[in-house]
Amino acid sequence: MARLKDYLEASRAALAATIDGVDEARIERAIAAITSALSKDKPLLICGNGGSAADAMHIAGELVGRYLKERRGLKAIALSSDPAVLTAWSNDYGYDTVFARQVEALGEKGGVLLAISTSGNSKNVIAAAKAAKKKGMMVVGLTGKGGGKLGTETDILLDVPANQTPLIQQIHICLYHFICSEIEERISRA
Image (cartoon, rainbow, N blue to C red; front, top):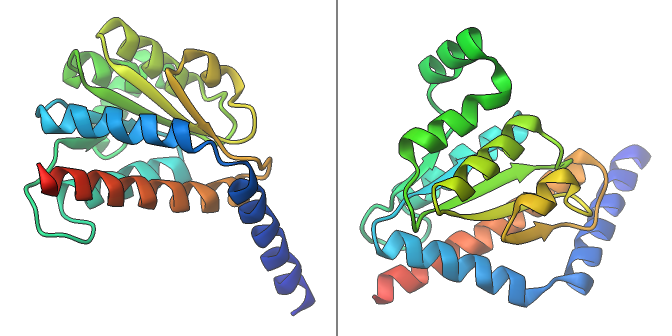
């Protein structure tokens, strides 16, 4: 059990570092941008790989369905959730552009791309951010410490002060649950 306690202590330290260093203004800007887009029926596109792909689907599920309140469904689309698109495009053109192609197809000016990458260096997520900018979308990045190469492609970078993927993902869940709660509260009032 010593290893479990060590892991939980590392988790507590990552959460404490986030609490101590959180930039509430950036979080508020991200919430406001996403809420504004969804209020105007513009899309929130969400992408990531591996655990971040699962997070993208989790976020879309919270916003299309419900988080805590009964309200209308919101236009949130996880770009990792269509295996036919993922496999067809990747097979024919490569995985590096699989999210960018979907941004091209589904993105709209005034929408938001939530780009998730623990390292900040996922080529396909960076390509999606560039495609979103071309469409006139705002890009919010959710990354680990520093933001990696994705950080320079975002309008709002939400980087957590951790370097280990599992710890970054744990903090991401806390952040996006808070963001979903705030979006839902604001949409419900409108």
